[in-house]
Length: 103
Length: 172
Image (cartoon, rainbow over all chains, first blue to last red; front, side, top):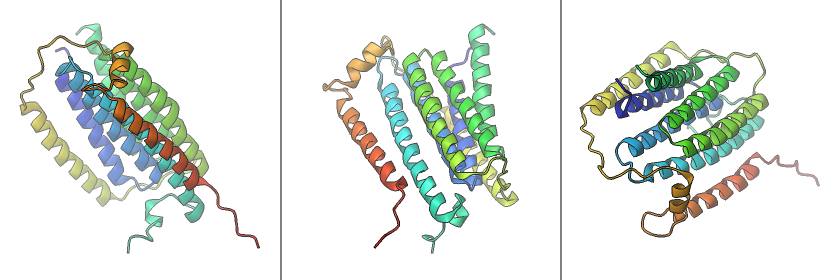
């Protein structure tokens, strides 16, 4: 069977839930950030697949993907600045060690 | 099974396999490298769908930018050769349960939904069409989001510098 929309949507669903699994099990901020990148990538794949297979006469899915990539880059940069600052003040980037705001 | 189908399944296996390894391996540097291969697999899927420009953007921004940034931050915050602690069994179990339920829900919806696409002629996703629509101020143009996102990038740039700036100790 030639792969089409269904197969690509399966890949993006699987990638999304791989990212969710990583986000729930990891306790290290850098690896949690990596899981978020996987989730954002699965969403991008979804937008491109819908644009190609359902609304090929428009480019809106492609523009959403471009803007998501731009925002993901900004998000990663800010997150890494926060991680480095946290490492300086706490000496560790484990989320269990940064719980002053919890109570 | 023609060549295109085989390439698609190879790319899918690369993306999902290295994605799975990226969230389960206990060595953080290997995790970053697996993430790199997963992102390259997604760029390959974009190439497979003939979206050349978005595949190039994916490689330049994710592989060339974000993964390098993540590797820098790993070097700044970790001792080399140190393994991450294994997550507790109950957390693994509940995360797997949540993921299984969510994935089952989504996949059931996915294969029962009837997709009705457009029948109009396809618009070629080349750089010419993308550029014309990106900077167009007409209906359906993306000039305003383009400007907003550039302000967001500027704000992120300034914010990163302010957050990561080392504050000097107060001297009298």
